[in-house]
Length: 175
Image (tube, rainbow, N blue to C red; front, side):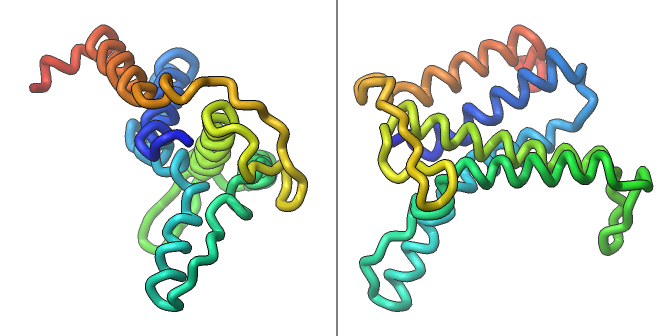
């Protein structure tokens, strides 16, 4: 199973590359933080396991039971498409904040992408263990990568991303 940092870093890198190459910096880098969080969202079952163990002394595991399903990525993508085509105003008030329609669409699209990347990483690196298309319908995905690669996968992604950021954005100038 991939480490949490692998889910976060890979999602940030892929959304960052999409931002650099296709969107030409049309959205803020704060959305990259959201992407990292979205890449970790399917593992919310781990926190639920901790809470069940702490408060109810339960050894029942709900991790991967419902959250590791492709249907959630499809649902968030559908919400993004729905908002894009049905929202009439260009800007909405949420409490004291004004949020643009494009930002709402981007938030749901990034969550859908992060969720899907998480599922694909688990599929490639962990095999068929509790991955589903929808809860109750298993997703068949043979393990594509050996466990030796898994140990250094996140470090390779991080180093490649840092080299890219140095090449593209000259991050050393900010240090």
